[in-house]
Length: 195
Image (cartoon, rainbow, N blue to C red; front, side, top):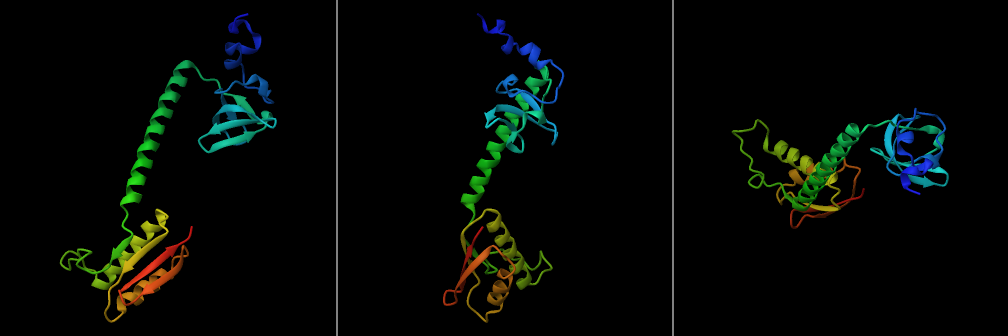
């Protein structure tokens, strides 16, 4: 017997049938486009697990009862467009993840707040030096948290301790910072994060 002659494998009957509540999971084939009625999400059938359908959606893989599914009617042209879109999205995700890895690797684990290192130019900004330094420090800490960096060193320098006090005050606002190891002899603080 040929596969086309097998009634349970007749794709035409399955793909053009009207949406019916209470899907029998045995009627579905891996890759079939389906809609989850309760959430109106589109996805594709990936198999069954403990009597539930495993559906891959843009929100992740979900386990769904058969009575919450309908087969989505997709013609060949729509299917081609969907496949092309999936491929473009996959390529975009790869580019973003590669870029993210490059940014993570390039992120400096030490940050020097000396004005000459920050390229402070009083003629180009109306901020006072201390305000400029604190703005740069705040931006650096936010980026470290975004990249989930476990440890950084902030170099505030030795001096009267004004910048050091401001840095320690700023650090207190971040709940991700769990430990500060000040090394005042070298004019820096080692900051530990926990996510």
